[in-house]
Length: 96
Image (cartoon, rainbow, N blue to C red; front, top):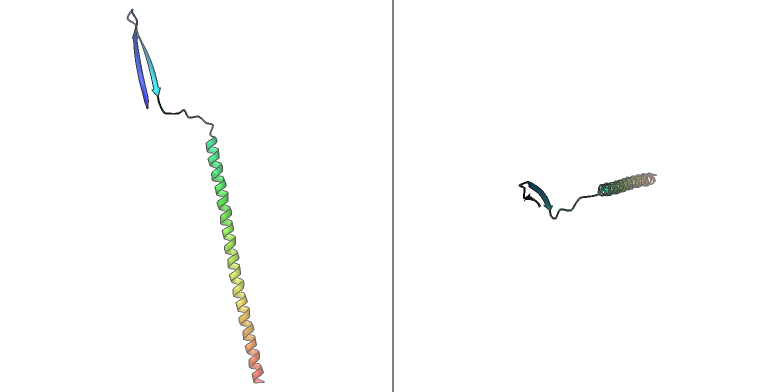
């Protein structure tokens, strides 16, 4: 809150002098060179790099999972082919 006080003084000769006093309370003076802004920018930058790292790790895990599923499907296909070959051999042996 700001309060303004005006004081008038009269001399014996009749002259009037006015003095104004401005009183403020509870408002601290702001000072600083912008260091807080730089700290905030640095924190945001670090968080951005951390998020990018985490997302790249998640993406790599998904690729590894997809590759493992594809390899397992390929192994199942190979096993099915071997069963088919064994069945064909068994049928040929029975026929002979």
